Image (cartoon, rainbow, N blue to C red; front, side, top):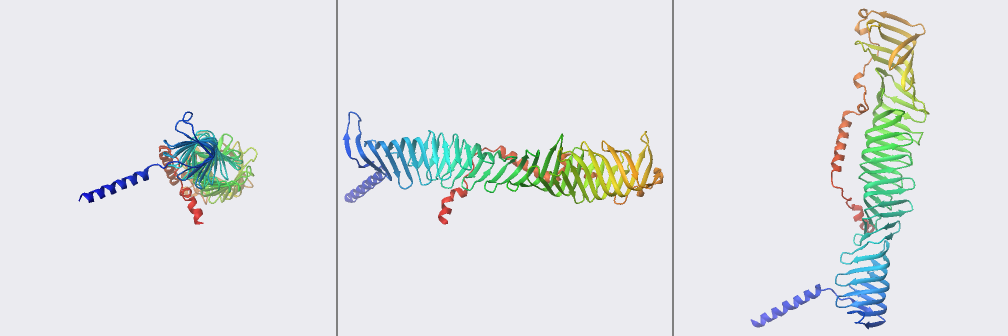
Length: 543
């Protein structure tokens, strides 16, 4: 029994000894030195190694001209042409270095150059934690890889993730752009950059600002979130979420999109947009509206889809599906709108209706023509089945004029004179100076000319053998007081710029605003690392 107890005790002691030995830090090994000396009076506790010194410790190899080895504390101090190599993953050159074998912590200073297969870092001093496989510096440093040069006051390198992190001013320089940020995470294998806080990306022909974004420096692709915008020479694009492909000069924006055109003095809004710079075109939808500023007024164009194409001064706006237009004293709606800024022509196509003051105009096609120099409205054409209706402000009737075509002239952006030609018919309510109805005139002729002031008819002249009858109110029955084709669409009239949007689009807009507000109160944190970044090397191996 005593013998068995002895064997068990011995085995436990040996096991404990083996476990303790396995856990204990390994001693630094001096593989070679031309000379060895001990100078206890000058350097207590140190062995002085001189000439072609080679030091080994758990996967790291260090060479230098001279070194002090402190066996008791398991440390070395290396001088002159120091080279530290960790497998095939890391090489570091410096004038001086310190290394602790117990903590596996190294410090290198003096023209430090750290290299791995993807990048080179130069700075004055680097601290390297081998346990965490992290290196950091607080002196100005420069990182170079195949695509970029990164300069910063301080930085940290996470070797396992192949990630550089900068939390102070950093500049990334590339032949095509310059990135500036105070918080940037950069992955050396993929070239992916994550930006947080005020950051800019400046190219030859564009400028990007973001406070939370991702940029693929190899493919020149960007995803931008908080307070971001993209600026071209003449356009500024904003949105809650944006994507940008620099190579294709393509940008898309989602939610609260605003595109400002500085040359044509216009703004386009919506909740989704695509901009193609090379083609000078854009596509906007989801409560889309284009606003052009003309003198002291603004012209609003809305539709389910807006397409804007053409170079500055030659832009064309196309509005599809339930198109609407509004300015202070004029509004309208139709199926689609085609507007050319170069020739100043806006076509309203598909059941168009236009309200000018209290007058309603309809026809098969409408043309609004502007002066391309002054940008003021110059003239109006209503082609085929032209019909003007003006509600009698003192009674229940309607003043009406119809013909084949209508031609109008504007004065100071207000309709001043109108000619209606061919097969013209008129119903007009006449009042005395005391605002009493004197009778209703009903006539036909070849052409009618009307003069308007403050959007009201002040003079009407009929040409070419007019044939008309003046009826007392009692002598003209109700069913005879409307011309053939009469339709009153006053309940559809767009009275404010907000009326151009149908109810369902306003509901969608309110929903987007609530989502934006909810996002604004969330704590701002850097973007999560994308799967494409984490799996970058896996994909390369798979190929």
